[in-house]
Image 1 (cartoon, helix red, strand yellow):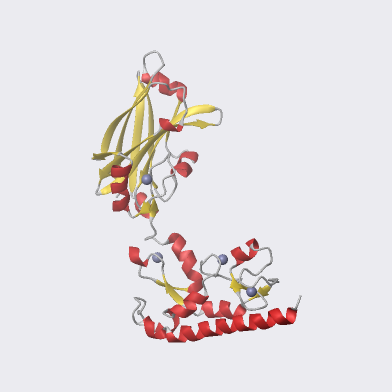
Image 2 (cartoon, helix red, strand yellow):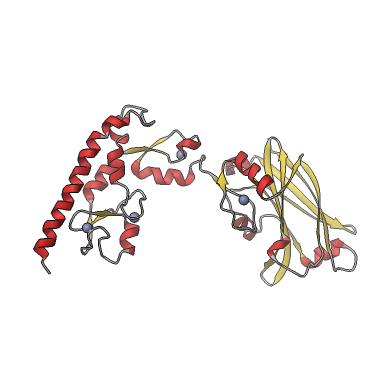
Length: 304
Ligand SMILES: [Zn+2]
Ligand SMILES: [Zn+2]
Ligand SMILES: [Zn+2]
Ligand SMILES: [Zn+2]
């Protein structure tokens, strides 16, 4: 081992970091080209060079405190630090436990646009407030509401409506009342295949009606519930009712649609919908109990 030698070599590398700082200064010229030019703090939040310094060299995510550095000055985010077994990924030196307070302070002075800027969010945030905002930004894309598949499509509501229609062949209905029949020839199977999704267009908005069988504790149950294609604060402006029955017996559910921000599974597991015990479902189906034939009627209305 020649620690002196390595150290020397590393000094050269940290010079490289210094060069980065110079580049940062130059990139001020490029600022004007970016769309961040709002407000008077141009020199601060529009500085792309600093922005780049805050990108973790390993995972390329922006770094948040604690930001770490190796004895040679290579920075690393705390997630990556936990993964690299105390070995700097850039120079292979022992990482130790050195915080990069200077960079943390620089970050504090930055203001950055929300990452959903292109989707319509025009807010600018202090560096450390940005992440938190983005988790709740109302412009963040929605996940595809189609349940029972691992669909990774995300987007705004019009995109997802088109996607449901084109890629999942979901039934689309206009109107605020519905009358739906669910038929399953072998009701003893609780496969995921037992669920269905229908989309309703009413009040100029879209609602997803889910129907499915699942195991609730020891019992097989059927469940129907409505989700709203939009944010929670808007979902709360609507109510809906579902009704199923036969032979003079009837189950009625009245509820508030859940935003599709809540996953299908989360809504199901919270049992926020019409739950029909299997025995009851078969009773409502009539016949010899070998076929599930449920007629579910419902209505959506707007609360004033
Ligand atoms: Zn990282
Ligand atoms: Zn290093
Ligand atoms: Zn935002
Ligand atoms: Zn999908």
